[in-house]
Amino acid sequence: MSEFYAPVDPEILRRERAKARELRQSQWWKRRIAEGVCHYCRRHVGHRALTMDHRVPLGRGGRSTRGNVVPACKECNTNKKALVPLEWQAYLERLHASATD
Image (cartoon, rainbow, N blue to C red; front, side):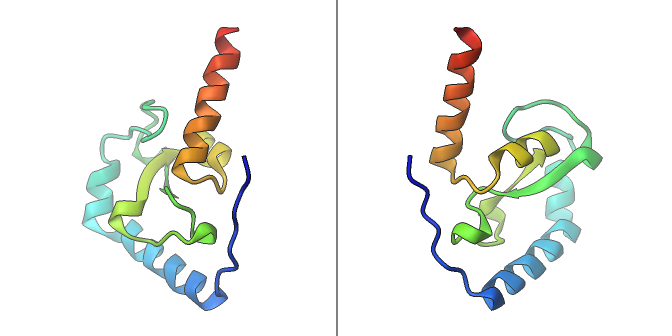
């Protein structure tokens, strides 16, 4: 699997991070995390333990929009790193396959 990283303008990154901070303060985000369930592993970790994950990371061209952010537990967010959804799914499938071997 090859990873593609296009250079991202630092000014764009700064603006997107500011938008993410605004989203985290919004009622929409607070409702989104209220159940306290990680989008990826579906574990109930409580709303305070959830982080905002960009499905398509900012460094890979993603944006801080409602359609691109999901609540994720710290473990999933850390493991996902800068993977895009297809790469993350492939990682999970490999993880599952090795656990059943």
